[in-house]
Image (cartoon, rainbow, N blue to C red; front, side, top):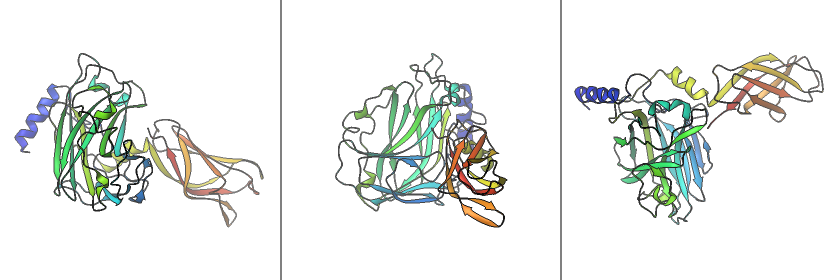
Length: 346
């Protein structure tokens, strides 16, 4: 895109109520942050596995995926998500699906004015490639009002930018809270329950049969790959150049939902053979009180002796601090260290 065209698009979006800094409502769209790790092999589990804020979802399929934070990327980017089919599934049941999505809080979407007479159009853009030509579907799903819109896009063996215009929706406002209001879903495999109708290319009440019409199957061969980066959703009729931001800013945004924390050596309060605990401040305010777990090993030190607490420690994340509790320790004068996970994902 020429600089003149880019400027014209930006001015058009400003006139529509968008533009400026923080115009991209997607978090980690350049796929730079991967707190959980950079690779998971042969998964069929519904979860956030690698790149922060991007979840895989499966239903009733034998297909399996290797997901990595990959260094293959178009100019101006360092990372992408790579999905590689590790187990094919060519016998597709009606209720099967596989997709990747990212979810957004309603309170971060109020500028869109959805569900009002002043509702604004949106521009969705991203870069994709694969191992061969294929057709997939990206869906915007309004979970507050059970409304959606789906658009198909093509993938080739070269990086290309997909640009999709999303019309304004004057029906169904987003809730102004910290819960999920909008999901961006990339449909990569689906059975007839989701493909037998007519693709919903305009906003309307959800009909499952219309959500993923016309897609290729990602699980048709173990040679199948799918790469994506540069995901941006912004107010306006025109996609603008991807809004890059400093890594530390993206990391802070991601940590609102998931945070892997190294616990410094700290004193465990309590008495011997009873519950003991320690509280640590978190570097960001998380979206909500979450769930916690031990990432690697939390150790209890009594003098120079270290004991793993992985089987006995409990982790309780709050919005701005985390409590670590352990029981049945024989020495109430010890210390702990280790790595924990705090999860407040949508």
